[in-house]
Length: 289
Image 1 (cartoon, rainbow, N blue to C red):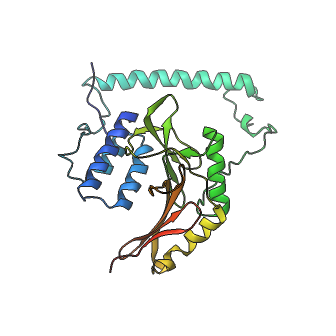
Image 2 (tube, rainbow, N blue to C red):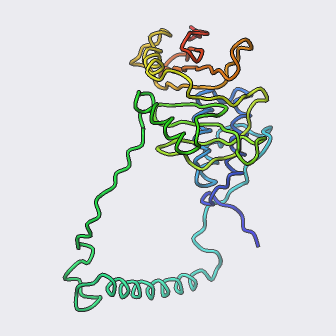
Image 3 (cartoon, rainbow, N blue to C red):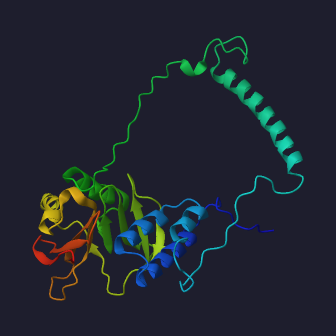
């Protein structure tokens, strides 16, 4: 018999997708800003439990959202009034497994007269295995970080194409066509590696383009100069992110891209710069007074 879900219940892709739909609805009716929406969507795509997802929408008025999350109860340490006996049995089984594990470990690696003799730690033996340190790109708005991000895309997907790529300072979000079902869009989150995808939706006019068809050093320089270009004090910048997608200009060459650089200060309004893929400026949207 199915039991009621709790805050500790592991989330499924459908739960994450439902949460993203609620966040989309909140963005549409003005409850969330664009920055808040992007941050929460990124968190939803990597959420592990239903409680994690619930915390992203619990402050929203979502009665009119297209979907609703389930009502959750807090996890209970006992399943029934006989839980005490169940815990006793579990403790007994755990004790047997501990003793068995000690015996097996001593048989494989022990160098003492008995498994309960701890005068010499078998784990202290040298095994000759060197440490392997993973060094994925993390500072994504740098030359090495942005270059490394696209290298990771090629390693993961075989190319650098997609509908949309949003790049924050330390993580990114990518929307790509499902290779097994072209009518479906998948969203991938990057945090040192490309995580498992979740279903998402994209606009009807979205196009698959090569998202890497721009000069990386030039864009890095434009990102670093964006606050001053928009009249925002660099010392007061809270968030900067890059968005890359197909060019909305109907006269632009097919398959070309446009790049937007968004800058949000700690106080005051945000602004953005919109560029063509060749780095030429399409629009400067200065913060409103």
